Image 1 (cartoon, rainbow, N blue to C red):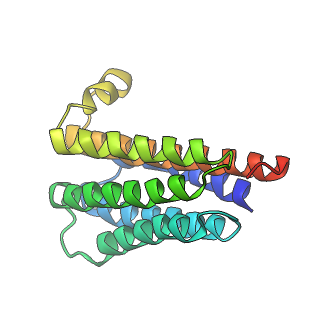
Image 2: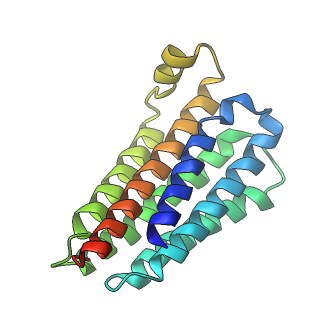
Length: 177
């Protein structure tokens, strides 16, 4: 089940990269749906964890709450929603750090730590306002810088989560979890 959730989150990461192609008015709703689905998948995967189940579940719940905030908000402009994403990433970092600490002696400890570090780096990028969009413009041409940056942050966080879940599944199969 963990591997299936990992592969599905990987598909969500690919979907997040398509955000610049959406009208801005529907973008926030799609982000909400992506976050809600990713959180649900992470929550399902957490139920199979032997160690750090509560902290891993918390990371999924935080993601679902962020998705719910996007779906519940009246405004669909990305700028105010960047604050939601930044707090979401920071709360996930906290949950994943706890999961990392609780997984001592387990092979999955490294992967939860990597996912926490990735989300911390992404939160720092948003806080510092670094031009991540320049990578998107170089690869795909001119798009809205804000939406492009946002889609990459979301996609990279999903990618880190998917990699973590797939590695946890591999460790579970080998009995090293």
